[in-house]
Each structure stands twice: as structure tokens, then as C-alpha cells.
Length: 234
Image (cartoon, rainbow, N blue to C red; front, top):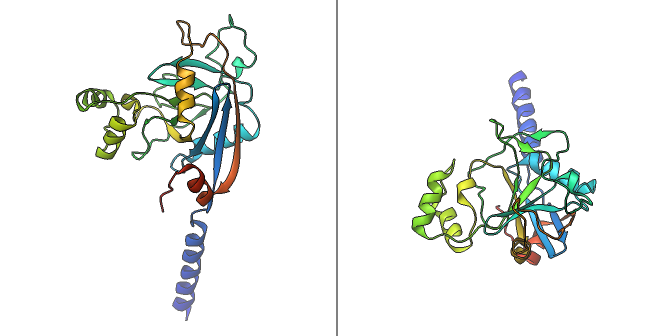
């Protein structure tokens, strides 16, 4: 009888665990409004610490009014420095932080394709991410020969499918495995191109301030898929 009770209890606990792990039918849609247009993005469950942090900062309106302060064509656009809010043209920005770092979160499924949302960082050996600064990949399309050279520089080699994306969509493959990718722009990719085409100084700062306003909204995954074409893994 005692063994039966233990087995029944184990079954209940297992059922509860399965229920608790059931994927949500909703997700957060990120909206990034800029002077050059609007982008929409999703954040990955494979990077829970980065996802939770970005959602919290967006809800707190931390990013509203901050600038894309570092822009390099065919590479990426970077923002999130709290010192960039209302910064004048002669103000040095780029080193501002919000007081903490996030442990690196690397997944072989996540890579630096065009539109990838990733965390900036300094040269700390643990590759911990900035608590607030992020970049969005523009990159470029690669032929097979040049892609192999880029992959040789990376901390993690791309899969065959990732290589196909780098060849047809574009990205920055040499960053894979070195910086935490935690999201993806699923709508508004041309906005990245528009920002990257702005005149910049020798530090990569655009001559004209490009500000952002970031918000998050919980939506049904089916609605996100229908509206933006992004397909979730089942």
C-alpha cells in the first residue's frame, strides 16, 4: 500500500511538472520606434536572463529617449547607453551602464544573422553582457569562400542552415559564440539599413541623433506569426 501511495505521489508530481513546463501560447512583442522607422522583435526563451532583463527595462521605459550612439555600415547599430539621453553632439557617450552585468547565455541555435538582437559587452573574460547596451546586426551577405574565413574567426562554427542564412540574408558570423544573441527583429529590417547609412564621425556616432522608444506587449504567438510571419518552434 505504501509503495502504491509513493508511486501515485510521484505520478502527481510528474504531471504537475509537465503542466508547469507547458509552453505559453503568448509571447512578448518588442516595438522599437526610431527616427528612421519602427522595428518589431521577439526575444528568445533560450536566453531567459537577457529576455527578462530587456522586458523589465522596456517596461520601466529605461530606453525611451536613448540613442543609437554607435553605428557601422554592414556591421551593426548599437544603443542603450543611459548617458546618451539628450546628449549633445560634442558629448562623449558609449561607456554608460546601469550598474550590473548579465551572465553570458550562448545557444548553438542563436546566431548573428541580420536583425539579431544581441548584448554589447566589454572585454571581461567571462563574456558577461552589459546590463543595458545592445546592438542589432546589419551585416552583409557572404559568399562561401569569405564565409569560411569569417567562420574561422568565430568562437563557434555555424551549422549548414546558418551558413545558408549568412549567404542569403546576411549577418556577422565572426561574432558567434562571443556575444549573447537574445532576440531577433522580425519586422522593419530596412530601418536598420536606414540608420546604418547615416553620416557618422570617426567613433561611429551618427552626426544627427537617432533616438529610440522601446515597449513590450504580450500577444498570442499565433497573432505574431500571422502578422509578422515569425514561426515559433513547437
